[in-house]
Image 1 (spheres, rainbow, N blue to C red):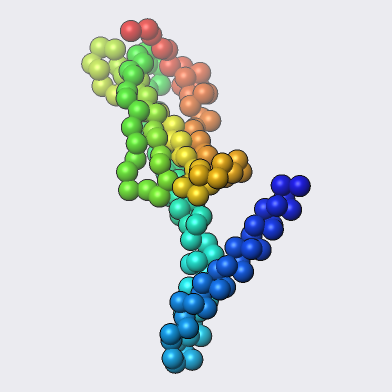
Image 2 (image 1 turned 90 degrees about the horizontal axis):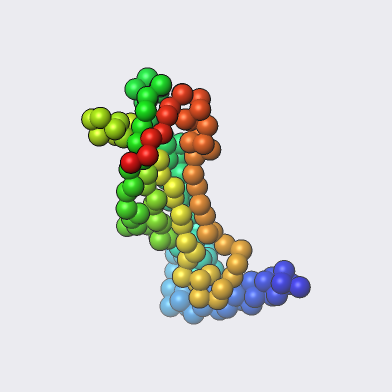
Length: 161
């Protein structure tokens, strides 16, 4: 049933987008200019309400690379003893969607040198989807699966503070 409602809303919005595009392009006198401007304005109006979700999704996926989530030098950490160091969570600015980062470090207990950095990224929904409460949207989380095998694989020992 929700699928039917969704496609009904989509059809109504497409009709409204066409009407708005006609309104915005009605003042254009030259046909050649109207031919390329009409589809551009139609696409912008149609996708405008969820453009933050679309662009934000691309930005979020660009952050979620293995080398951005888990940073370590295998030669330096192999067989070492590390200590957990709590880091404050922070927000990434300049992105279309709000993105929070949970940042963890493991340091050498003797020198306090950072040996392992681990980040988890969480993206929240866009403004339209959040305001209507639509549950099927980007509410992403990405983390490294390698992190959970790293300590056993490289024979790393964790010590308490």
